Image 1 (tube, rainbow, N blue to C red):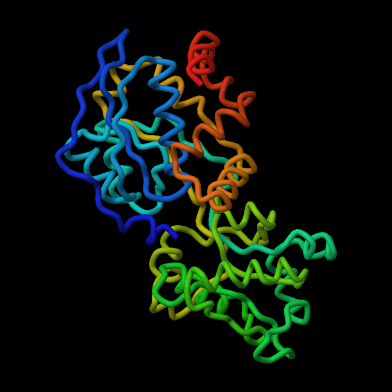
Image 2 (image 1 turned 180 degrees about the vertical axis):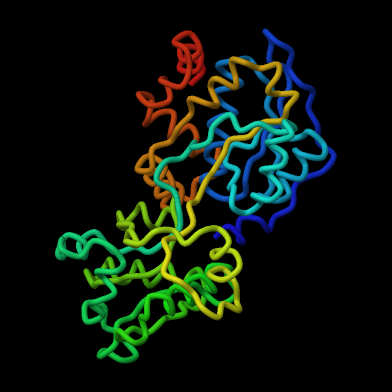
Length: 331
């Protein structure tokens, strides 16, 4: 997933002046080019414009391009959903040097990559909790190619997570235990396999990531691995590598998302930084919004108004009462 998130370009030639203490002024904010990124940026835009009197310009881009623009040019000044693992080697030094600041290290809860099963599968087998448990029962997931084997659905060829799932498949001795690793062929194929299983009430186990609309739509349940994380070095040099001679059992590397701001912005916007620090989306809320966006084909701005309408009890805890009153009046 993180490889996919890092592929877009950012619009150039856009800048914004830093706001002085006590006033807002112009702000350039990243609008990441995936559904949750669009939603968060547009919610922030409405709240900052209507509640704090800012003038917000959204800059569309992906993980790497947005980071480079912030770090090298100081614009955009805010990135609401910066995935960390995609550029940890670049982001950590910037945070340590103080050129960028993480004002919120968990703006979305319940996110991450890993293995999932449908809720009815989990409910039918409460004794099976971890990946170690499920792996012992390939008969619950008969493959269409060979019903005597269990089907584990991995990543399409060409995705970074393909190597991870291939190596974990080997590390957990899944072939020996009676499993087949299925390549779904594409993102549509992966989504289709989840949808088909859920619509038919069939068991399914495989890879996906959160937050995403399809996990929210079907309330897919994350499978804990039941083993300790084998460490960053083994993950980077072996598990995530195409050439991994001796993969070890491990849980998935922790997925992290930060809200980051430039140093100049951090120094002069205490009230806005306090809002950004308080702005936390529970996983079920984000999941329901992504389902709404997918079902209604809603863009970021429309989804933002839907969120502000449906989840007033949540977002009003992020801002002072007088700010919340201004936003509600504007809607």
